[in-house]
Length: 407
Ligand code: SR1
Ligand code: MG
Image 1 (spheres, rainbow, N blue to C red):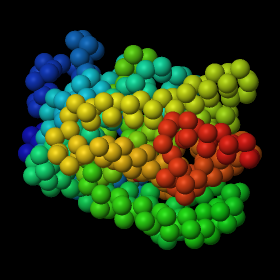
Image 2: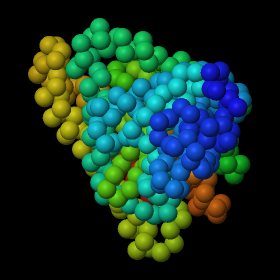
Image 3: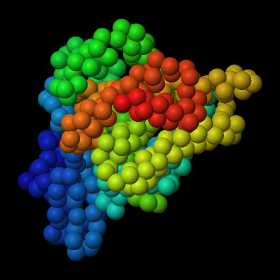
Image 4: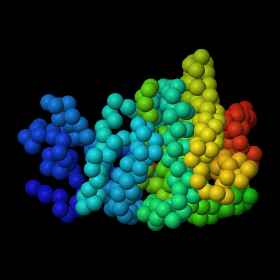
């Protein structure tokens, strides 16, 4: 029987033993059940439950390679980063993430609150469910976790210590390759383009030198702009949700990067939800109900973020130079520009690259799928190329609606 003093990749039976001996949650004689419930690209996630006491816990373990492909050899230290960031996010944005019970450096695993009463947001959106509090919750999460970890609020040496502590080179490399590079040139031959769209993609994406140049500039901003401690992978698959609650999970890509990387991911993944609803919901009234909720949510996420950001700025800013009149507006304008750019990058990479989203891949009929992909790739281009023109939620939505009309 393992005593967990040396790392190995656990199977469900090991996880039961682990939960019994390493967590002070279950009776030593409890008849525990364990299932691997992970459906992400990288880690192994186990739910352990005791039907008798009704207690349960989630245990997440990092392997030495990514689940999606052994090409990605990754430090298991990402589990430390994830555990520490979840604890920090819980302090900065209380109630908007899971509780962490334990981090185990040897086994590179952590034990956290079981959120089985919630559902992964992408899954719920694919079923046409809507969440009226989402924009409010996610804008609070982003403002609190992002602004409070910047040089604007933090003492600069303390912030630099955080930059050091959360340097995350391997996970950042995945983003550099998959988000900023490969969607525009497929130089590693890993892209996965829908065959009937390949010629269109060659002409409109790979063949667009101006687009490739902007993506290159954005990559260097991602590499060098240590603006805030970002989540780094804030898509609808990293959010557990129910009507009255939103919980952000999975911050293993966290590092000091541009704030717009998080806000842009939220916008892009709402656009994917819209594209899925638009392509698959047959009943016009039902389609209007779902798509108009997504449209309103895109607008609200951006506008609430802007309003809350300015309010929090006034309350929390400590950096003297940041108090100069006009500085806050300049700073926020930069975030909106990056939000647009990243929304465009995320839309491009999830449509063309190695890691897709179900919003697109589950569109089973070819014609609507090709149309959905072209809408996403075309609005992506305008988010990237015209990124200085995006300031309000309406700016983001209008670009989407104008693009959709063309196809
Ligand atoms: C190799 S990992 C592929 C993608 O999955 C994660 O969720 C990140 O989005 C990453 O880019
Ligand atoms: Mg993830």
